[in-house]
Image 1 (cartoon, rainbow, N blue to C red):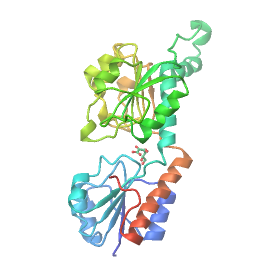
Image 2: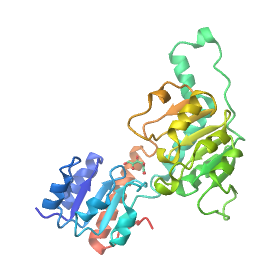
Image 3: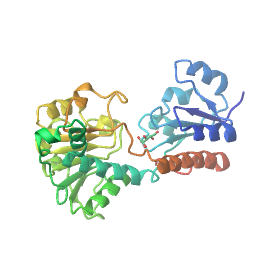
Image 4: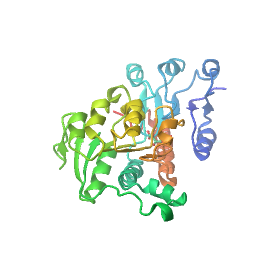
Length: 313
Ligand code: 8YV
């Protein structure tokens, strides 16, 4: 069996079908037997289609001697060894733009939910507390609030634009200031957190952003502050955040990502001031179909021209 295309990780069944039917893709085993598999079947592989969760390690790329392109499903490529790929002339593509709207929509929904206590109020009604306990606790006003965005890339900007509609004053911290935009720039995550009611994490995952939201940043947000994370759990000091949410030093959090997902810490599940989502921000039919189309377009562009369509750099 000599294949040009390898797939690794979980994909929607119709994407798997297209990869296998149209491109005779071979599937890398998810267990330790992948090394023998790559040695036996991977010698002609030019393109690896990988899920963001699986990525392409340096060891995998080294095991595929003809590999020239990695096509990653989703935007996050922190599980792919970008430095190794660059050093070995391997192009890396992700799927930008097509998921921006749905992820930004979800971030706004999470901000509204955690500040207004919507999921908690839903639990309150379902538990039958309303008649005995009376009105639900008072929550926090969203319109006119101050919101900081950590990471003003495509998704961060999509969130900022939406928040403008709420009369929210938006500030941000980004690796590079964006003087072309009307939002106030903060020189660090800490400076950003000091001046806002809520912090929305929209930065890229990976070593550069590891634990950017650390204890002091969470303390700056404080008992009346909220954290929303639609990016990667690695950007936030999760244990510290949980401890502070539990004893009220942090007001609330809405989280779509977790360090050990799909496992969610029991301490978080036990709290009422948190909104917990199963990494669903891009999970609409329309967006997942668009991601799959862009994965195929990248693969087919590489096979036809030797260049992927949406390289990461
Ligand atoms: C998806 C994501 O859950 O794009 C990303 O980096 O985390 C999400 O959009 C993921 O890509 C689905 O495989």
